[in-house]
Image (cartoon, rainbow, N blue to C red; front, side):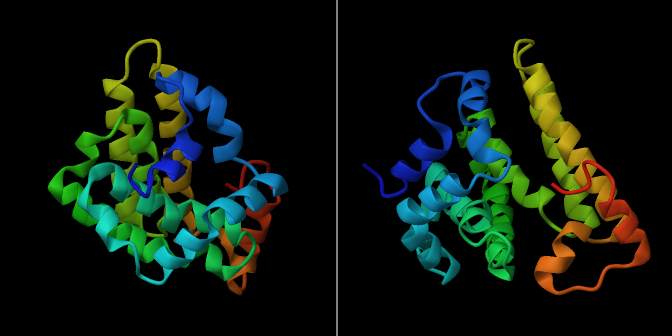
Length: 199
């Protein structure tokens, strides 16, 4: 078994269709649950720390290994280090790995539901151009989805568009300001009082 397989098994489960995977794993992927953060820490704290320190580069030689490394840099820190600046410490390296991988076409070797978590790296960026690319990538996933899964991927696209709109408006994600020690503007504070402003 490849070293990264336990992480992919935990993240995506054993279901076959994208709809089934999402139904089974959505609670893990989105929203805060202390027990899930603790499970991530116990199961993958060590490889996450290694990835954040610049290690595990050999994982990137295969598409699924690169995806797993991206998860260790982009998704897992947001669970293991929730509420601290370290939650975003892997973002730059995740973007670099994704960019290099996209140039090689690594994402074509992944299932569409796996590609979601590659493209989320773009959606997490406080960069308008990368936000536009995220929307384009998620539009492609929606357009390529079967009729049975079109609604699922349209939902991912909707979130990408909402992230892009926040970056277009503020140039950053206001909900990260407190964690990162950034002062918020009056406009940002008013925005954060609205439902759905915190991803």
